[in-house]
Image (cartoon, rainbow, N blue to C red; front, side, top):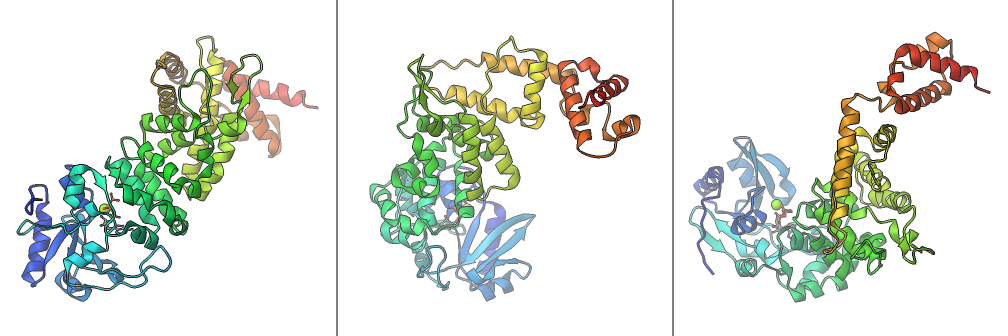
Length: 455
Ligand code: ATP
Ligand code: MG
């Protein structure tokens, strides 16, 4: 393997930091994800440095550095507004809780620091000043062969830190690499350690996996190794579950294909992953058609998705977005639908969630199987009708009505209370059916009628 690499992509500021450390008699290397991504020709998010300078020396060399994780030997140096993490070389330690090293100890040997890292391609260091590559675990060779391999004994490495098995699955998707067989085989026996990983960290890995071209690569690994059984057994019920004549794939594979086909941010792709999670619980044989049916799987699916989102500690907004999409992912549009029907659907879906629905619906259609031609004409028809309804300025929430609660109280001499909300909802229904009704006088007249006819 080469011991020199092309360094043209290393930012000038990184050379500056290394130079500063050299001036103080210290060595430094770029290391970890940035080296890996640079060698792969991928975008580099963060340039991380490691150095043989001890933490107290680091704070002297960079007096204005932020002591981000000084107890672990990490400071953040800000150069021209960009953040660089500089970390003192650390050695291997013991892990008794399966999550964090028991103690951190600093070393001066770069090889010892690389030996504590998770995968061979994450354990490459480069000294930018002379271009030397330090690659004791042959990470470059694995990168060239696109293989993910644990540093050292995979059983031991996975047994000490439970997050590593999930990082492995995630990298299979984001880097499009394959698991080395011994590394793969070490996942199932070490799941006891994986169980100790916090759900926040699991969620973060899921979200990172969603940035891959095909996140399903990560989820297939999770399914096959037992990781998913620990974190989300609900998804496994769809494995091997045959659908109906419209689908070539089983429920699981359809979810995978839909997630991969879904163009959107990670949360939207989580919704795609979960959109049919209600199918296993609702599958029944249709008597007439003699084919499987999944009545109500959208409603049941939203009920199943809710605790999954809670468990994975998604924020309230994210959880609401995911479960709303699961709940409303089904809509069969035809040209016969009236304008009132379109307005009613937009109200149910929510104006802010239309683009989510379109993206998920398109992915859902594309994920039926290689032989099922994707027909997007109904979706295109729906989009056009929604555009029209929105352009007409139709009232889609009670806020869009030309009267409000205060108007009703004043004009109809009503006391504040539940009745105001009920009246506004009823008026919105009236306006949904007939937009011309959205005028103050007409609405007040209608409201008077409603109040008069109340029992
Ligand atoms: P990304 O930034 O894309 O998530 P990364 O590999 O840079 O990928 P970081 O979490 O930024 O991941 O970690 C930086 C480096 O620290 C890794 O490349 C690896 O060398 C080491 N590392 C991170 N997490 C672990 C871990 N759980 N066990 C061992 N080494 C780790
Ligand atoms: Mg990183």
